Length: 93
Image (cartoon, rainbow, N blue to C red):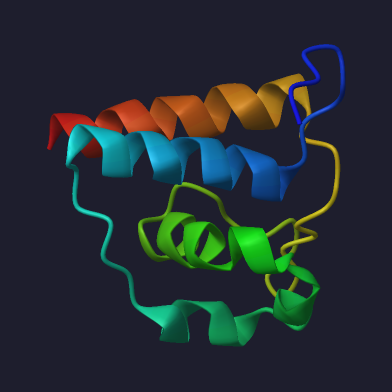
């Protein structure tokens, strides 16, 4: 759904970046085991599962705490800026 005035969640950010990376032909492999430390990993929506595994595996999105991702939490401006900065650093490598 196109909703330009809606908030963006952490898992939606993951999906944006993951799909863009796929489109551009960037490495989208991941280690699913990286999600094991997060007690709320099961809260990731089905459509965002691969994307969240990828961004966590690549260090683009980190936990809100050492053991929680809070995937459906609204991403703050600071989080968005940090995630985008990490993404650009990732693709420069």
